[in-house]
Length: 160
Image (cartoon, rainbow, N blue to C red; front, side, top):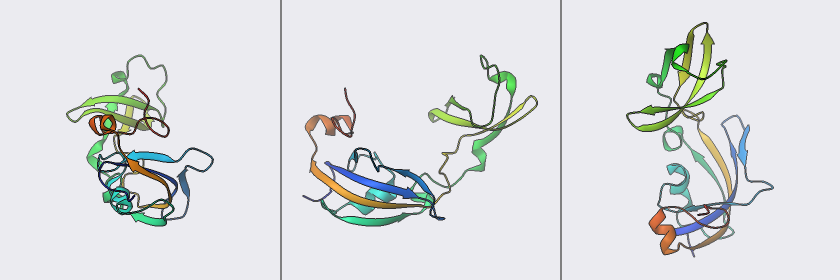
């Protein structure tokens, strides 16, 4: 069976940036499982996995625009520290949930300068070209429930 819309694919991967630094890997873990065609993984990787079979090994270069997007400087804002209620000490690297016009969004504190807090709403990998070394371990038909819910259930997926 080949990977196509409404199939569940499982794969092992190693993710690196353009300098070869390992950003993530499934080594020593269960393979990642996803419902093909449901937007569960980044578009550039999903596109390259279409038509692949169990046992296929491939290297995929995904440009930033087909991964987590390009960096958007408009997503960086300076806010007064008083907006962060209930937080004793705000530090760079902290993450908060913010309600935006696009819904709930994670923002990271980039820096703190006195009463000014600079936040960044870009994904940490925005603007980064990604490289995946992938090995397909399983391909199966999605269940009706998985199709209806838009994600994989069971091992490597979501449990209800």
